[in-house]
Image (tube, rainbow, N blue to C red; front, side, top):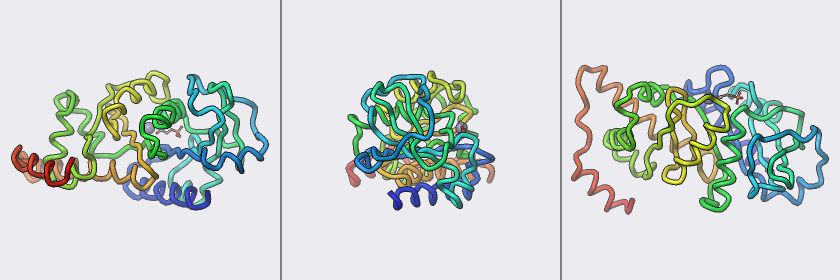
Length: 256
Ligand code: 13P
Ligand code: ZN
């Protein structure tokens, strides 16, 4: 457990260093259910709290979650003063806080838990969910032309070969929806069937990964492409992008 908490704290630091985590921007969760035997011994330190939706596959499970209003830079320096561990109750609709302090989970908990509920059976090797505000990707979501399905995916893939290699499913798009809402959670889930990273228009992204570092890297490679695109435009030209032949060659060579 210590290793997981340390890694989430390390990634929270990356989000701050990248400039993607202004004030309390962004949140991270990690599925700790493998530690249930030990965590079952810990008494609840909060009353049952409604999740706002149903996550039956997570009943009895445990999640490390960043606290609402907490700053990523302090998650890095004092992890358990800014995160809590929650237990999902048997009804799959409420949770209690078990550790270490009564720190209320992120306002994006509906998205985190609905996504974990999906991962449990559909992508079980993925334990981490990150929501963050990567500057250049969010900027690109202000251009309606980029919001049509897979337009941005192909543009970002074509900026540098690694982006397709390390984010082979591309970037799903969720049209602007109120932060923290159940509607946003459900729309995110719809996109996750096809993608590992999803853009929330004019807000941020959500990524899943086997651990916090892998989820972070999926966002980082996409945002690197967005930066290359921006820099080419700032130099006064529209970047050519890799050709279809070059992309197909890459797809075959890397078995993507
Ligand atoms: P929290 O502080 O509640 O995690 O909210 C941050 C955020 O980015 C909401 O989208
Ligand atoms: Zn946000």
